[in-house]
Image (cartoon, rainbow, N blue to C red; front, side, top):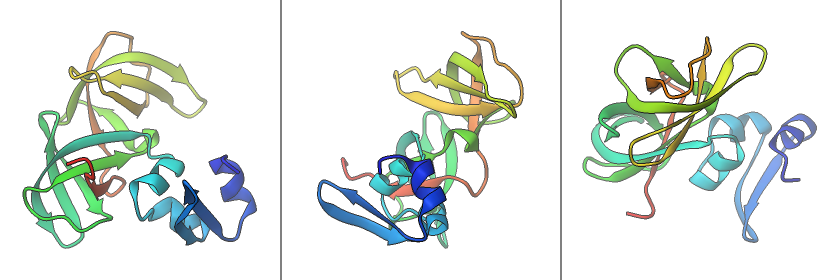
Length: 159
């Protein structure tokens, strides 16, 4: 199936394939929480990608400088200072905040029962899918920040 929800609800083990190659095999929980690469993360709902430069590494956590902010994530591939990296985060784990974060302009919002989900655009045109506890009007400048412990970092293969 190409349906993440269907795979997670029906399977004891999932095989994620890309272009005929096995990317990862594991339990639904393992793949959902610990994707081994960007392809698996994409399938598991990590819709927002933010590229940046690694500015600190401590254990399995690192910070990147990107979009005018420092963003923290769990390393899923080895990274060292100065590497180009991609921070991947699910919409429900990228939240509108009054504090530090990524500046963006709200493009759209929709109510989905428990929360509002939105699409924002950075000045460079890149899109960020996020969550908010209230509706944020279209055109509003906001600041977005990943929920601590819920963002993943991968080596930027395009660098």
